[in-house]
Length: 122
Image (cartoon, rainbow, N blue to C red; front, side, top):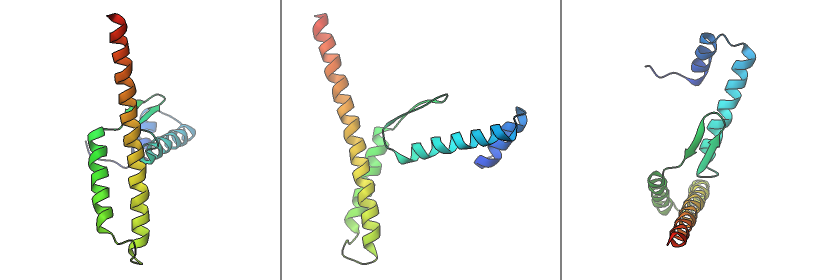
């Protein structure tokens, strides 16, 4: 299958299923919302009605965080041209760290709950 742009894919889908332009606009709006929420990474779990639940991969998150932290170390904050890049990368690193902390907190809560369930069985 050849890779297609989103606009072409939606148009082709609407033509195959004989949807109107209003439906095409709705699908485009819905997909734009989903894509933006996936990219924003406000939470590591994202539930999208009709599509299911998307969960962030912990290994990929750790790799991305390490890569951004390494890049942050190479930038000079005091340099005029590097200041804006530094602030952007620093904000991204803080967001990724908070996501990683949320994941670890959730895993710890699950482990504590499982342990309490095992204790009550005994």
